[in-house]
Image (cartoon, rainbow, N blue to C red):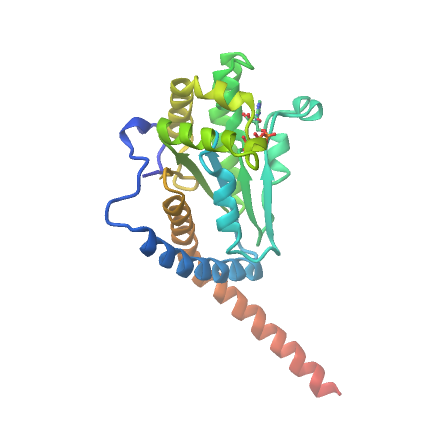
Length: 272
Ligand code: ATP
């Protein structure tokens, strides 16, 4: 489900966390492979043309698969020109600045592809649910976020925001699985269980964040994420969809540069 307009009603409980029936794991695997190659080529043109940049924001509850998605999507890209930034509890220095300060410095340069594991949205999610700031403060942040993302878009950044949508049952299974295996228990902390008890408050906070900041230049995409193979496919598919339409302009720019280079080289050769 894609949200491109501010103010639309978002009801997460009405959106399935399961893949559409028609898609099998095998079909998804093949499609992901094809998309991976396309993504690599799109990124190559993005990097060379330097007309745009890409910002992929990943949000979701604990164990929704932010890390896994980054691993699979970034795994299709050329590491040159890719950055991954995780946003945890703000440091003392970060708290002494406005909430966008720590985020803006990681926004991608033209040609770059940035992935955020959590983001500025935490400042209207965890901050709201845990009352870490007064309502009067976090309420204003929706507008600041919308303006910030508009600024990025004006600078050529393609902003794509994903909510990885898992069910309560799937989350419980994943948390238990992590806890029970000694090799993965380190990924879990007591907070993850505590956060789970605030499920409905987070739902409300996510619904507001999505409906108050969705825009044509910075859409929210709610991804059914109970199946990891479908989640990865859906994110890759939607990134390709967003970049494909820009690629002709990137290739034209690259040819232009190519022609100039050829002329320079021919002139040099003629002088020899
Ligand atoms: P994750 O849960 O994202 O996989 P993690 O458990 O290793 O990662 P960190 O990356 O260290 O934890 O930090 C994530 C935590 O930081 C989350 O609980 C998140 O809610 C919290 N956090 C992020 N941004 C803020 C913020 N602006 N204010 C308060 N807490 C924040």
